[in-house]
Image (cartoon, rainbow, N blue to C red; front, side, top):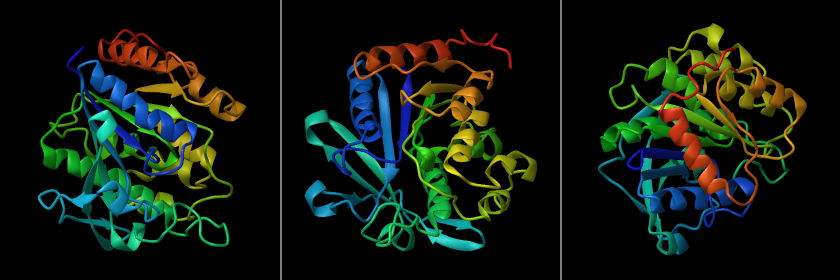
Length: 276
């Protein structure tokens, strides 16, 4: 499996945003995977807090220009790219002036969640999938990090299941405790349904709390990773009952070897006998 293609889809990534356990892993795991001889692509949102000049972001014209319709509104998709010189690694950024230009990440000046964070999450995951298709690059594993990426397995299994670029992709979701209080917009499930996904499949996010955003990933992923040591009991119970392989918390050391071995085991189908 040394030549496997791994697509990383992360909400946060250092050095573009401050370091957290998620942003640290999202930066160093792809580099380590690349160093093992695998092909990688890395995507994150282009939050306005990211300093484009300092990090030398530039638009990829051939990948930009598509409109993504969400809740009957067209949102132009802009793709930017930057390199991490010390890692020999490129990062692709999903951007849109209305959704990501503001100089903040998830919260406004009053420390309240932006009202359109749900649309931003939909735009992010759909933007990643459409851009990967434009790249003509078929990933073997799609590894999602963060609640903002957690809608990707749902879209992949429903809207891209027959797409030749994703027909054989396995989705691995790392489940973190880096979340938010309260709920996203009450119409999130409706907006997802407007994209052609059956209403029954989005019942979990009719109340779009952080735990339920994790739950929708758990329900649709092919494999799961316990990415935080102290996940709440509700989430760990759902992971245990999901009927898919679950990698226990790999810790701060040794995660590279453990996760890459986990990729191989998932791709080789060693867990096909796992029962719900």
